[in-house]
Image (cartoon, rainbow, N blue to C red; front, side, top):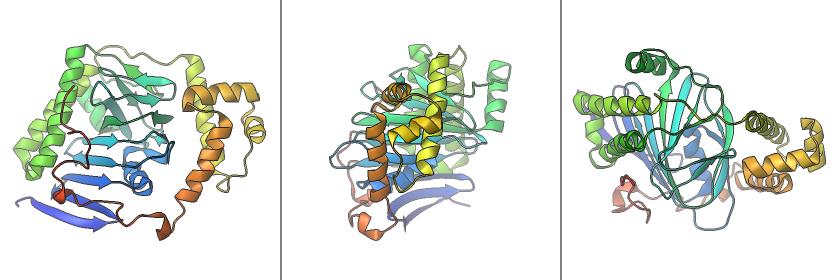
Length: 319
């Protein structure tokens, strides 16, 4: 059966996809925070808020191959999000160029670094300006199988977010394999549905990703791990109070820490004070209320009418 190209309008997102069995690619171009928030849920971002004013522009390319899924994301505005990895998944995340910096809690992912999160891991992530970042998702079963084949043993990842600093050449090889997969989806989408090209892209990604994990991670300190757990509890408390009636005193009391400890944790993990974060959450709840009045009619632009990704730099450059 020949793969076919599909263009559809779904939940105010213009999708360009090609599907053949389990392989597919989807390209979304957005300039509305609500639409971006909805789209990024597939990347583990279960809560999302823009932290400064400006025009929201974003592009998301997602490619599903037989044994993994790949995504490339371009964003223009500072934001903060709460990430939770599904129970049966392993995530590798990396910046796609040297100018992009993605914060994972108090850890800053820079060029030639990557972050791993395993099943059930939770952490806040933020950017402070324009950023291009990528994800590679494995099932737990496939990740174990690939590491066993390539490293000689099953790699057991820590149960918290970890920074890895592979040799620069190895990191570049992963960025290059990631970029080639995204480029194929955006310029030759039918190739994703063809067995041989898709298998070649997948093999490059698997080998490059596992090579980056051949060394040792740089785990966060115990204090940082404690702060991550504290922030996960904070996020659950905020979710349990959707009307924004929490105060900083009530929050610190419920978490069992002093106001000083809470302020320090929020500053390191969220980049802001707890009072600022509570105000942000209240604005987020109001902005993302389920009403059509919150969505602009130009929230999404048809990808096929764009010669460039809404003024964003080409996602394919390596460095």
